[in-house]
Image: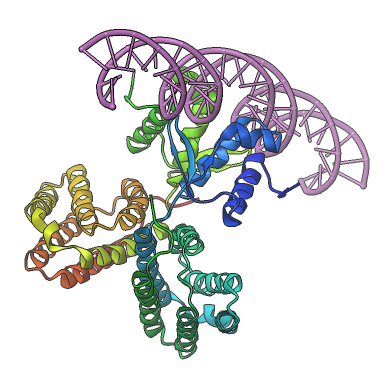
Length: 220
Length: 220
DNA sequence: TCTGGTTCAATTATCGATAATTGAGGTAAG
DNA sequence: CTTACCTCAATTATCGATAATTGAACCAGA
């Protein structure tokens, strides 16, 4: 029995569904039937609806009146758009990173190193984890809460899309991990502006790889 | 009796509440009691909850478990953060605007002219309306749906904050409107890159005005 | 075959009632 | 006077049941 300890039922359910989408239990396009989940979790329809409502807000699922809720599909196009936007957001973040916040430069470097290790070992899960951590650390270091929120809102799409297609050949990962190391050093030298430019280029470079890599899964 | 014609109750209610927040019927910080609104609108609690859930997703209101929902207050800081982010987003948008989409260059110019007219006439409402239109047209012209969404998500905060404080002295508006005209001409000449830079500077300039203009209303 | 209508099961949207939680106010011990 | 502990009214979270809507299957007439 899966059980997350959170405040209200609806929040726990939200987490549960999110987890299932991550694990592929619910795949993009799948329909989520409220009463069905309710029965399974021994609750009523209400908390399920709320959970789905919040997930819709996160753009993880899509709901149409009287027609149900589906796990959202992220098109290659949308993936590319998100990536590009993340690029400029991270560029902005980097420029705003303050010295005092770079006390965590070692932690950042460590995350970067971890992505490299994961890339070499072809450990995709580990790569994703540390990649996410690396980028988020930078965004957080900007001390710009709104920026963090907006950035966060774009992450699920990227993750979902990465899950969906196989654009993860070794060279792409290695190049990306190498970018990370360069970016860390730019920060270490206090050249935030340059770090920002590298981050933007980093995003564009992944974008390039993606565009020239035929997606394995076709959209409907 | 206010009545919006939309599909489900919850959507209509969402629109209604949104309208009331815009009109100041519900002010920032106000608490929205579910059953109270339900009684007023002759519905049950459920659709109200859903409407509030969606508004929370839009970051118009804030909800804490068992502690209710309040109209969100946008701090000067958050306003500034949003503005800055909009700046880089619009910069990106401008770079992506395609020629064929600039068939609407006249419409864009018209919006810009309207902001100038409104500024001269000190018609704040009109200014807001055309300012919003002007900026959104550019973002839309990028043909980047994700960008439009992210940008949209930042607009309510700006509006709410503009409503809350009085940083609208004539010179600020006139300068801003003048920026608009310059931006249009950059687009007209096909120099999207330059237009993008102007847009970013435009945001920064408003930011500057805002930072050096003591907010009238203090935060709690 | 096609088009338009009809029925029906499945599902979402809404309802009215109940359980759970909070915050305010009171109260007594220290 | 303060702190910890109660009590209770107000409100949110959840429940079980019902109304509204959809989409598919079926059917009849051109």
